[in-house]
Image 1 (cartoon, rainbow, N blue to C red):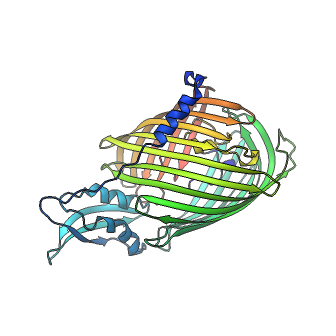
Image 2 (cartoon, one colour; image 1 turned 60 degrees about the vertical axis):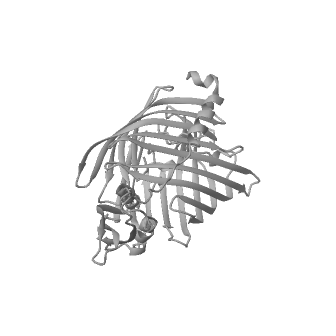
Image 3 (cartoon, rainbow, N blue to C red; image 1 turned 45 degrees about the vertical axis):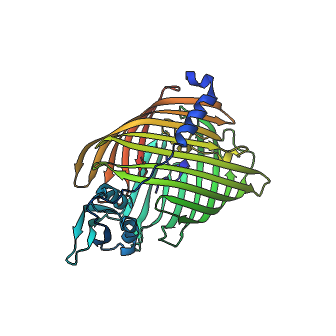
Length: 431
């Protein structure tokens, strides 16, 4: 559950280069478009070939979930196969913890992958509580990250606070080889929405009642290449507010179509799971009130181990939404930065984060690491105009080995341009 809701959840989460903003945009495009490289090991001198696999430790998870992961390794050379590739593929499911990964010979003389796994706890209640900026919000979600043993995701829950309340549910079917995945989601919220500047000061404030549904399909063409198509309907109705500040002119009801294409490859260095990924997203929205707008976004991630347990992290994000109405503006998550408040909104973003992460220690429940990064972000909106912010972000990250949530992060972010300090909390997000 990456982002329960932007307006209910304050999760994070004058520079010389801006004299030439096109240079900054070029750099973002360059890093976002850095190619993702893939390759397979060649057969070694021994001539032994992996002919199958044996998996132990599965209880709730259906065998075909792991079979799909291991089938690409069948036919590979036994003495040239990097077992860390296998480890990364299993760990990347988010629901399994690899205990042993080895190559073994059967009594019949066949060479197989012998894998032992431990299933993570995937069904649990998730209490959530946030306090800050005069708002107190709390809620409870029921989560199943391995629904029906298919590595499907399901959650249902709500939040209540000073500014309003929210109900939300979703089901995401991961699909299997030869069959598409799909998702369904629905939400309803009644709240006081606050759009802020870089210092978390309100620039817009209005009451709103919103609801939406979405459905979509996805397909894995290879273990690295995925494409998706989704449809959505959103209704946003303005409500009277005693403290209204520059509210939008009218309500909005809109249908949307979205397509996406992504490449992703994971690596395991013995301590940290890294990835190289590139995704492109195009959406078209038609409003019943007569407005239309396009959305184009690009996101890139490059993580590379300099040595086991120490890696470089590069993240970039671009978002272009000409003519987007106020009610559909986006948060800084689109730029993959967290030096701006989650309540900050803009039409366009170009962001980059350059940093390092160091493994600290491992305990029975997971792995702890520390990451630091310097972040740059260009944004453009109707109220604040063109802005450039830069600053430092650091986090203490806990990668969970027994609970099927990828990670929990606690940290601080400082925006040098606005001299503003933010507390950062991330739950179940990719770092």
